[in-house]
Image 1 (cartoon, one colour):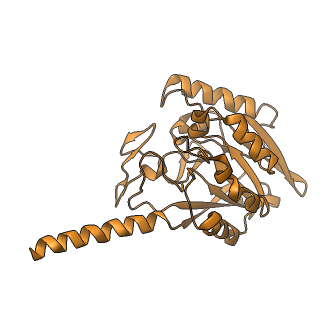
Image 2 (cartoon, rainbow, N blue to C red):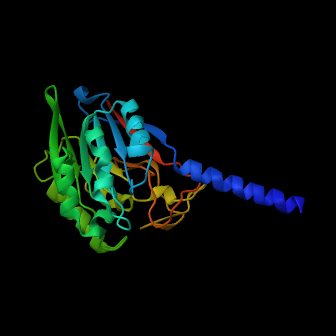
Image 3 (cartoon, helix red, strand yellow):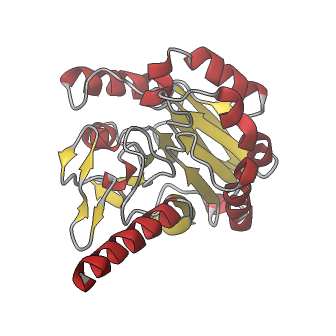
Length: 278
């Protein structure tokens, strides 16, 4: 009987910790160097927020907003699934946006959940009206001193995971977004899906920001993520920074949850990236 009660106590404690862990925030810092980064952009700091899925972090998102504010970003990147298609409430999702645009320039791309709502125009119009730079197969050239870099963003394909159609869509979207960007300009690409890493690399994108994988939802110590959409069981691309043939891919574990309501050993993550000129 004592062993059974101890077992129940352990289960209750584990459940309580999981719920607690899903409501807190961790910050992961990366430094990215590249010979194409101009000296005037050395030290530029980006905060990446991905896969919010309407998750709550303090009343009116106060905890999330304060965590971002502490990082003092130059740019904020929203890399898709800002809303959740299963409980779509745009007014609620928008509540944190004025605070973010008051801190830094904010850039946004769609994720599969925005596309799934069939309300992409409503979502992107609301964000644009609030001062967010919405990148739909587009790029913006930003300057510092006498130098410039490009920030590009592509729509989520939502055309079937890992298919040739999705890869072709992604390739065409990148071509469209970067058509007027000089080939030698350092370009940062916002693209929701990490499983298209080969395509990003084939297209010679220097630095890519993705999310989508939710860190594998369940993190297994010394192994990594358990499962992610588009990659299946024990996926390779769920978090961290990866390098392939000169393309660096930053993957956020994201913040919220969707159909699976809890993360396990997978604290919601804010990512920061600081650029370093070589």
